[in-house]
Length: 256
Ligand code: ARG
Image (cartoon, rainbow, N blue to C red; front, side):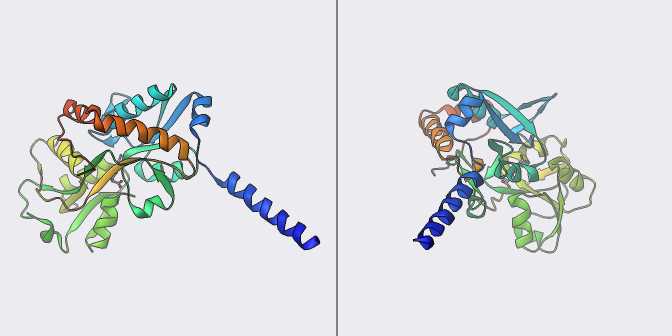
C-alpha cells in the first residue's frame, strides 16, 4: 500500500513538472494577454527589415494578419538571429519570425507552423570574382550569419567559415575582401546584393531547400493549430502569393 502511495506521488510530481516545464502558450493564453509577442532579427529583407525604426516586410505583414485574426496586438522584439530560437524556446516570446528554416534538428526543440514558402541558400561573390559555382568554394573563406542554416551548411562542407551576428556584417566581410564569398538565403541575397551598387553578384545555384515557417516553444499546440488554419486559407486563396508580388519576389510554394 505504502509503495503504491509513493509511486503515485512520484507520478503526480512528474506530471506537474511536465506541465510547468512546458513554455508554450495556448491560443487562450495569447487572447487573454491581448498581444502576440514576436521575436525577430530585422536584417533579412524582404522578409523583415527596418524602415527607419519600423520593422517591415513580408513576414511582418503575415504576422500582423495573424494578430488581427486573433484579435490581439502585435508586439515586435528585435534581436540578433542567434537569440530568436533560444528566446522562443525559453518562453520569452510567443513566436519566432525570422525567415526561419524548418528542419528536423530545430523541430526537436521548438514547434513550427506549416511552411509558407520555399527558399534556398545562395552564394554571393564580388562582381569580378572567378567563383562561379558551389564547387569553386572548396577551401575558400566564406562569411555567414551566426546560428543560421547557412553556417551549418558551410561548416558541414568544410569551408573556412567566418560567422557574424548581423547579416550586414557578413556582407561587409565580402565587400572588404575578408572572405571570398557570402552564403545567405536566396531572396535575401538578391535584395542585399542589389544594395551594393554592382559590387557583388548572386550566383545562380540553389544549394539547399529551406522551407520557412514560424517557431514556437514546445507545447504551443492550440496556437500553432490556429495559425496553421490561417496559413492554409491564405496559401489556398492567393493571399500569401499576392504579398510576395507586392514585394516583387517570385513566390515558391512550399507544397511544390
Ligand atoms: N533561413 C535561415 C535559417 O533559418 C536564415 C535565417 C536568418 N534570419 C534573419 N532574420 N536574419 O537559419
